[in-house]
Length: 100
Image 1 (cartoon, one colour):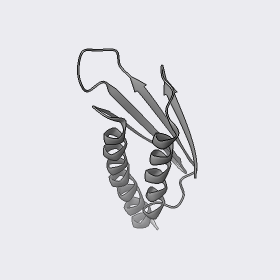
Image 2 (cartoon, rainbow, N blue to C red):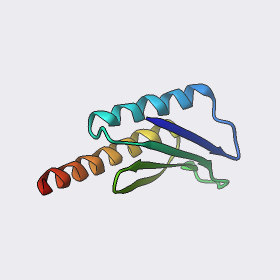
Image 3 (spheres, rainbow, N blue to C red):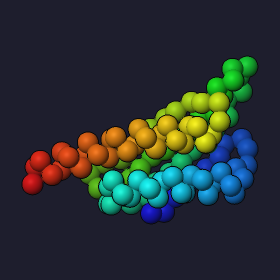
């Protein structure tokens, strides 16, 4: 799967990009028809500790799946987003198999 990582107002280091790629690759175990993933990393300028925002858009046949999380660290956001995407993909796959 092709992964596009876009970081807004900062430069993401290669370790973070590799971490995201590795986590997203695991989603293919649950749903093998993923076309690509767009990942948006943003830092909100606030006094709150939870100022990292991660948005992941998965393009799959029949529509897109989007998840947005706000956390203290990008790694934490990515993990939470992946688990939410995993649940959504499993639901989508169950619906598709019910229609066949």
